[in-house]
Image (cartoon, rainbow, N blue to C red):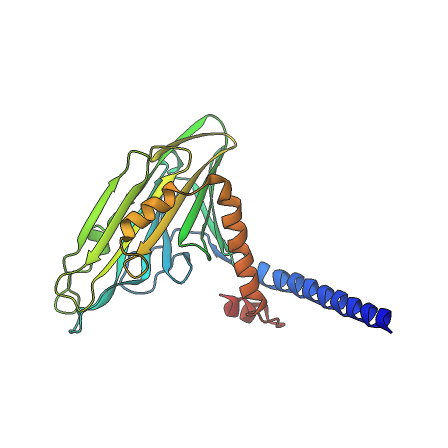
Length: 298
């Protein structure tokens, strides 16, 4: 009797495991075929309404990707970074800043950006004659961080730079009385170890002070510049925070980069993929109409 119960238990576990594996494979097949494709650079960005650009995020940090192959721009915003004032037209979500990846030699290159929904990764492909730049990026679902990997395939060497900037004139809408500009307290700079940072805050004449910060580093590099030969890559690591998450959000993002072990990069990506795998296993539909199915997944 005891053996029979054990055998039944083993069979139930085996069947349950097989069903789970089959479900994972089905989900990956359904969501994996859904891609968002951008064959041309977005044109409606920056704008004070919805953009036509690829977007990435994790619930805290939101990224919108714009620009041409020679100058990719990642606009950075946060759900918890607003100007908060109980008065007409004085409360609004604010852009924190923008990250630029500049590769002058790729001017005039072909443009293609694809977003893999199952893994929540964005893949950019730029081709100019024999030179190929591929950029993969994701905002971690687990940590408030972002990883951008720049791969080069082709002859010779190609050079680039990464810049982190506060919003410029093109990111502001000055149209009183409907749209007003209020001064923000800002910081920007770099450390001797190669961490580049910005912060932006609304602390005066508000109901609730807000502050957000971002920092980046080019891994294994104390500079914001990089040089790639055929088959090599540069990895840009970003960290984000706000005064709602840490007492000193600027120091938090800087220290997070300083303390990051490059050997943990594969784990960061693996945990990100696992989170999204679990998400889609609870949030997918399988229908005969591929167009409707794609719209649901998006």
